[in-house]
Length: 347
Image (tube, rainbow, N blue to C red; front, side, top):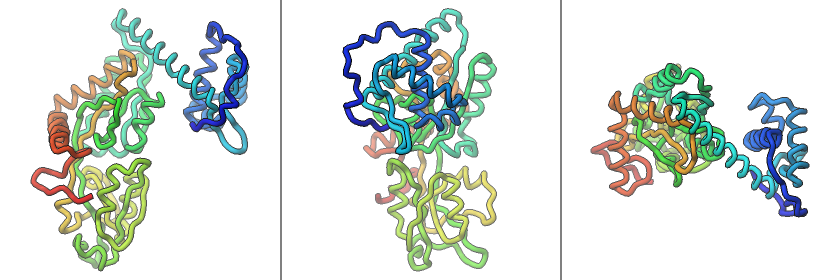
């Protein structure tokens, strides 16, 4: 949502006055269009009607006396005034959530919606009891609308900040200031290869001479991708998402980092084998339920967060995650250290 020239700020001294129900509805449509990155994208993502959405934007711009967004052949972007209105719309939604929460507490009921973001490929992790928490939430809050979205780890906190979701489950390596992270479970990862039937697995020190490529996972923020770049290989190739990493490794010509649970839970044409000599590169990473610290959320959202935490505690997965985070903080490293007893790989 990039801004443009200050010339799109309203030049009149018109006082907006009281916002009515139609204004608030149009502001919500404006937020959906901004979140999606354009009218057509908003229609596909939120199930809106194109002509009605366009009319709502024009009506809101007329009502608020200013151009909110630029839309046309060159793409979609918010104006400076549009960014101010977007923040105001987000504040209104937070206030509505707070009011709904107060009313729900008075009735001791759960209502509204809970939008959850989960980092990609947690399903095969036997220690990630996310589905269990959602299943229990369905029982105690049947009137609440629940939605789940899968995000790359480096984009999940942005989805929370942009109000696309209420809470998320993500790696502690992707933690950011202003967010609260409560430990849930741990993920273990190793450097894997898929040698062809007539070949032995390549030793870590022989990746260059045997012509193996290193798969580097592409992130908006570098993050954990740094450890992949530190491995000496004959060449590098990039992948977006764990399945893309696994696909390249499965060619028999590449090596790359994968979580152990993904390897054991995925059937492929060639078995995954840990690269000999790479034992010291094995890592353990804590995953947490993540919320924006200063954001007012509904009683239902808090209940979902608390269920994720309580189930992780009852199944015994959160203490290991908490200990890993504590050890990382004590050592002054970002994210999680390698497994106990193994030296940290150079970055």
